[in-house]
Length: 377
Image (cartoon, rainbow, N blue to C red; front, side, top):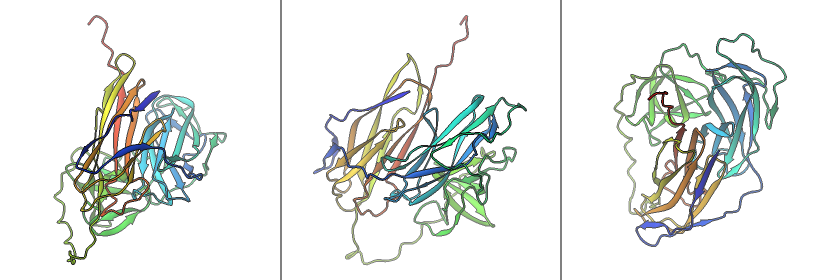
């Protein structure tokens, strides 16, 4: 179990002037997203060590689906955000879980979000046998709730695990319609887009591993690493010098509109935690900055926690090049697992910005028990 506390009573530390950040409780739409599971099917059999790939379809009649999570034993084991920070009306994703222990009834739970609003859970129950076991076979009686578990496949890739014997390093597309670009950034031209599950050979990468250079139909291009999963042996992929940024079209700067640009400038703290003494409290530093040309009016900053809670802050204003720090983001861990802290700036999409691509930031946190000391030492 994980307890996360946000100490909201402290005043915010500001860099710049005429800024204010205040915790608020924002009204939530009565509607909520929906999500279904198409793969795997109920009762499907796996073995310990298998990668179970879940294909889920989420939709939302409001502002759109912003992320989809896969949970096992109420712990987030994988998640996928929408390529559009404001959300997508429909989002189909692939999410992975490596089966750790045998189980006659392992429940995989998928939940979709529109901002802080969660869908009802979609569940599928599968079976996991010992490695090499021949006694575990698929059944037709696996239970499912909250979504369909009808069969189906995706164009370009398997939905229940890829060929693990293939050593070629490749990127699997984890969200339908991911853009294939001429360079590593959203300012580069779009060459095409890819279907969910497509696997593309890697030929290069950026130094920070945020973008992969891949080949498709003998054409080189780039995909964002945030929406892919690496498969095969990827230890020796070289760092590639990207092509020059596109030359901007000349504009009349005297009449061109100047816009704000809000970004999560800092989200830091311990992300590898050893659980000593049964409980560990860890603080995280969160700062938001306006790197645009004009002041931003009131906007929300939403912090998402792995225990399905979220906190909304309203920043009343933020001047150009000003930064606001929100103190007191503290997590208390008392069980091992992988958790995710996620921040979305301007979550209500109130501010017209020069780009919406840098409004979101995540921090994955691994919590483990200490390594046992051998007896006699």
